[in-house]
Length: 156
Length: 156
DNA sequence: ATCACGATTGCGACTACTTGCAACAATAGG
DNA sequence: CCTATTGTTGCAAGTAGTCGCAATCGTGAT
Image (cartoon, rainbow over all chains, first blue to last red):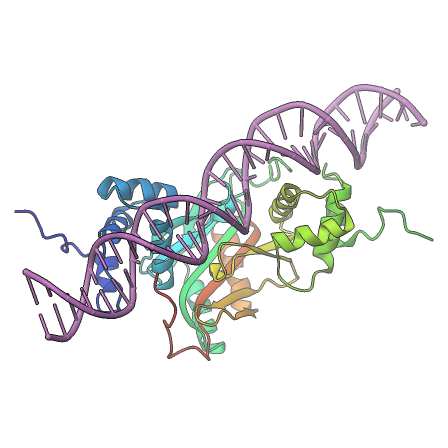
């Protein structure tokens, strides 16, 4: 027996109810891709995967939905220090925020969770009376394996 | 008596000597704009100002120079949480890194300096054996004046 | 089940940024 | 000062992301 299409809300989908945010075919497709993704996706990949579920999904709907999710603090947007061009990557927000580190030489991406980061956010909320919805800390530099060799990258 | 054009190096310009990085007309123009800027500039503004000094400066040279400066840790790139579209802003790296906070409702940008941030970077360098060149912490949320009113922004 | 309202969509045109390439120019060496 | 080397540039075409608008579709009330 096929499930009605409002089933399987997932965290992202259930967040929308009761805020005047409508659940459309297209959003359902996009959200379910986000919810099942296991790695950082860029907008083009997300579009392709969503179109496999609902072929009518348009590029601009993907971008609009991403903006919506960002503003509600449900996903994080990363640019990984623009190591591979200008694109952005997206990931579902997990319980614990993590820092992203990108090696400027080998391109490796590392993640790191830190209590000090949580403490820092607490300080901002308190000292600046600022209510944090999204935060992102990205670091570029040289990983343990690439230190010493340093530049080695094209200069232009 | 007019100064020879290699004069007035500024911090940015002097950094380049002896690393195989050439000091061209165009770079001189771009760097001097960066060095004298007093606020966050976007790439288009930087291009316009640089062209007033050297009309031959091309858009792509501006972007290439910005990438170069980023990779050497001499400037910071901000997107201010993409509050005003997709553009990026640039600022000369100062002694002390600062956090940028963007209000999702009124668009105000605030800056904040924190010892805890310095401590966090120290932790990353030590625990991850990662040599930091650039780091950027941007926070989106609601400023003191806009808390309570919260969403109020277009949902789409 | 139907309706009305307004949120959401696809489209096409637009802005932001990047890249490959042939021409050019900054530097080191003679 | 001249030359060779090689980093750098402008151009034009490409990719990433945005926006205004008319048409469409969810949703809550009937």
